Image (cartoon, rainbow, N blue to C red):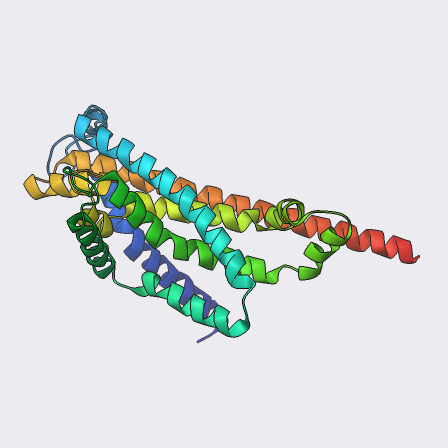
Length: 285
């Protein structure tokens, strides 16, 4: 096999992989514009299902609840995860290894186990009288559950970046008269901000998308994935195709923005390094 055939085979393989991944999504988006409810034949183009979607009070209410929940849980998880990462980084190497291995458990653990275990914890708390007559399940349990599964992702995003930083920068800031808080906010935090933002966006995406853990801990509250599930149990409406298309586009936009911000931060850091090296070279001459 010559080089040209090898390149052609590689490209064909990549195309097939991407088709396998994204062709079902493309078909779903195409049928969200289908004039009829048929899932087999495209009878004509229409935007009626999108209009119907945005007039569906149940979906809009679930969407609002999901967005507020995702925003609140992502902010809290990002703060807690970043503080936890700083604490872990100050430990001994053996302690860091132990804590990081423990932090991996919620990530690799099947979601159904996490969801059921949190539900049992909240049921036990409810049996002790927490939550009053209305019960504990609802907004509070969902918020705690989403923070729980988001914190490890924050730790694994911010941790590697923090370990790459030169510790002498923090000590130099202290020697120059900064308080520990000023040294952290003006020296360490700006360098961690791309990783923190990336962790926040990942948490936001996972929170909006989560179904399994939310299903076991939502009580009577409906998030968007739960609302979609309740719709599919009755009859698969083209509104679901429209809603899924909107969610896919929103999540794709978040990912693209995150990658663009990371690339911009990388180029800015590289530019600063080149300027510093150039200034150092001119000083030597």
